[in-house]
Length: 187
Image: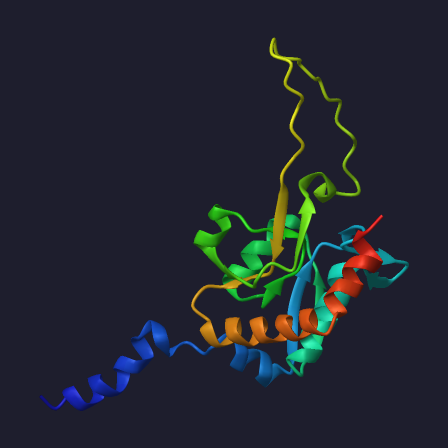
């Protein structure tokens, strides 16, 4: 019985709820760690040594709204989502389509945009030859459906999700998101 008080003291440490909320970590560091690839204009890319693009500007706006600094970390596709999942990065802002498969692994912001899936081809990808096969019916090929773009982060961070939603709401409400969309994504 003398171990019982010690065991009771350890229980909160063993609880899955004992981990720090992501928003607390972000505030303690004073920065939002944003992973991106920096190779897909107009979303995110480098001009010389400077990161730029729609998602870079959006990341800066979000960090400002959260009252922290934006820390952009350029990584590759293989590390991007794994790094968010492991906590290496807070979010990935890399034109990530909101899919059912990813919703099983991550929590997401509200969508910040909707784009034609054909826009998501990487800058360094070579165009692939397409073979069109006309069916016996006279139906025309259907265009690719637009996809919602959202920001993934580790599951189980409701305070971070609420803070991110509030920041995105302010950016949307005052027209800054529409201005970014017009600047970077409209032909």
